[in-house]
Length: 285
Image (tube, rainbow, N blue to C red):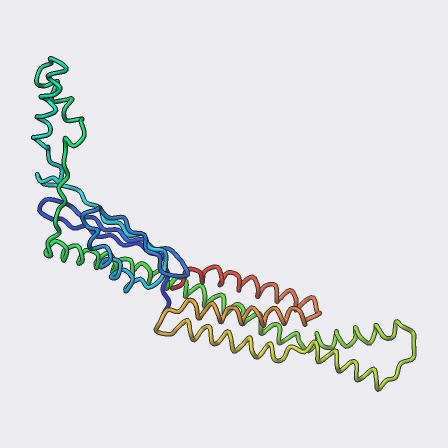
């Protein structure tokens, strides 16, 4: 069973004084690339959360966001009373205004507010870890659903290539006859006497050069191997990519050897199906 690298997961955690929202989004990438957006007070736990994400998602471009919304009376920003009072005292020496006006000016001055760094207790972080786990379960479910859709499409494309290969096999004898006749006509057009034995030897040489028996067998084997790998327990997009390269190599060789318009048309259709597979394989884990 294959998995997509595209997915989205979200989890909301309600604590007594804050609401924490965790979002995880992933897109395709050759390797694992995690971009984390989290508040500064949770930075000390960032590496631990990254490791949790890496173990689950394995590969892809991942955007991880942890958003905090205060819902209680507590706040990390505190009024620095001593500083504000000192500002008001100094301002009163410069400007004889009422207390309200002086206070308005004082709170705008540097260091009027101080931010106290919150300490993360283990109970809160465990709740965050559980919420992250739920978001990862959701994104994995999303990836599995996307993988099923991709698998269905891959099976269709591989079957289409297989059907086109069957048509190639069916017209191959008439292709070889056409190639033989073409070579014979070319010689007769020369209006020269030729040694028949030598001509037969040359004819056999060229017919062997245009023979695609091995390519047909190898292509059929590669198609079967792709289907088997597709239905294996693990999702292995890189392995499927390698098999796809081999499929493309055999299709290209058949095309270069065909020298026959009806077969070349079938080769073009096979290439079209294969390109669609390659495009979608970029999303496979």
